[in-house]
Length: 194
Image 1: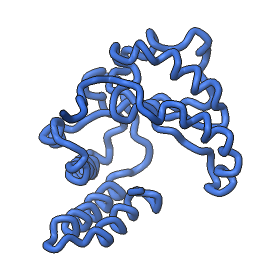
Image 2: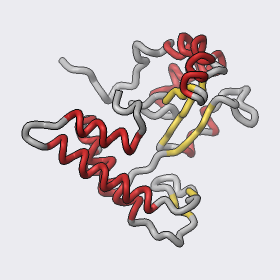
Image 3: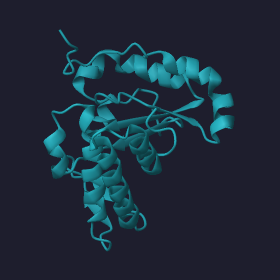
């Protein structure tokens, strides 16, 4: 029996941020920026299935003031009802954000991480084709306004072209994994993929 990816559970790495928090000052000096933690990357932090552990997660976040936590959701309408009582104007170390999909990526919705390269390619293509004069877009699902800043289409087109090269290396026979990795690093930075 394999893992049930439909089940929302706590991971073995649940308390790792506490360890990272103590090392954060030295890591910050090394990186030249604050250390970031991507929360609940395989689920949605605000879904009902996460109610059982969300309060404990907020406690870990409060206790780790040396780290910045990125919390993304496809359900921004649920955020207000699931914030902690002491949220006020927000925690200084939390970035809340919403994710959105594009129709071309729906093909991969039921696929594994194996398809991330194709999803990235399709997303960059979609971004590169957006109207340069458009100032905002409506997020799918929530209908919230997402404002664009600056001209991102050129950078998206460049990332799209680099992703094509990376995928070519990945699908070559024999595979050129090192070359593919270098191409993805041009897009996502030298720490990717680790």
